[in-house]
Image 1 (cartoon, rainbow, N blue to C red):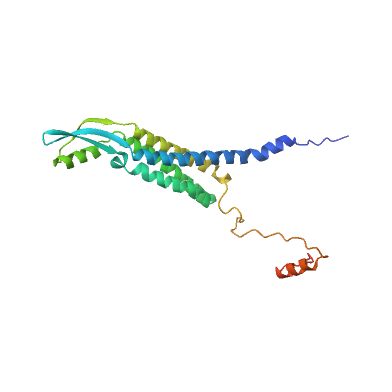
Image 2 (cartoon, one colour):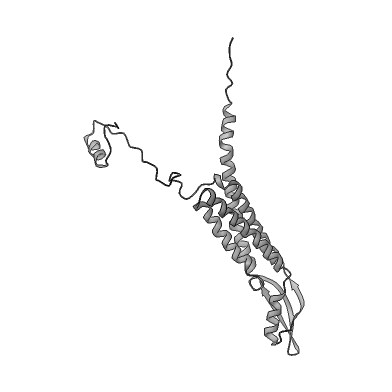
Length: 216
């Protein structure tokens, strides 16, 4: 009776071997792109005009505007934190990488929340109106808002996506200390074979503290 041994198809083995690494490389590229772009967008949007209005001053009207940084400084601050966390992901491993990835995701979520809350906030303009008129009860009229708060929220969303990718796929990403083993020690250098017919190589091996005979 003959037994037939099933031989795995080479293409199947190759797919199983390269599948996770391909997903890791793809997620790494997307996370870097989304994280860097999200931080840049949030910072840019925070410097733009978010709202405007008119204040009554000494019988006249004074137009006033407020930038995103006047309304709330959280989106810009969290964008910087998220960008730092994105870089730090590659400097740590295991549990540390997960914690930094979570920080990245939380920075993005916080930037989204802060930008959305600031989209309808007029307190910054009211403060400017009170300072310009000298009346603490002075308020803004003809209030209008721009789309820049929502652009800042979009930047925070990109940071959030980058953080989620880092949490899910970060374990497969490379780290800055890739040339070291997991215990932190540098990898041992492989000894080059010594040609016994060349005496100069024997002396060089002895100078390096190696055994030119190749025996333990």
